[in-house]
Length: 130
Image (tube, rainbow, N blue to C red; front, side):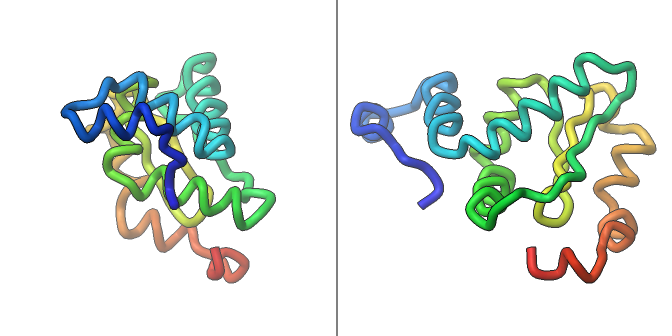
C-alpha cells in the first residue's frame, strides 16, 4: 500500500475534493523516508545558488527505496510534493531524485537530466536491482 490513509481523510475523499495540505500530511506520515529525502534535496536547492540539487545516496533499506519509488511514481503524490515545495522533481534509478527551480525546467541541465541519454549514463551494474 502506498499510503496509510486516516479514516477522516478517506471520508473526505469519498465526499469530494481533498485539501492539498491534508494530502501532504498523509504523504509525510506514510512515506517518511521519501519525505525526508525530498525535503533535504529541496533545502539544498533553497540554500544554494544552483538551479538543481539532487540525491545520489542510495536508500539504506529496500523499504526506504520502495517509499521513494512510490512517492515519485505516483502522479498525484509527485505533483503535490512539487506544489508544496515549489519545485519540479525529476527522478532516475531508485534513488536519484533532483529538485529544480521552476525557472530551470526549460534549461539545458533539466533537459539533460530527464533525457534518455541522461538515464542511460546514470546506470551502473550495482543499480540494476533497485
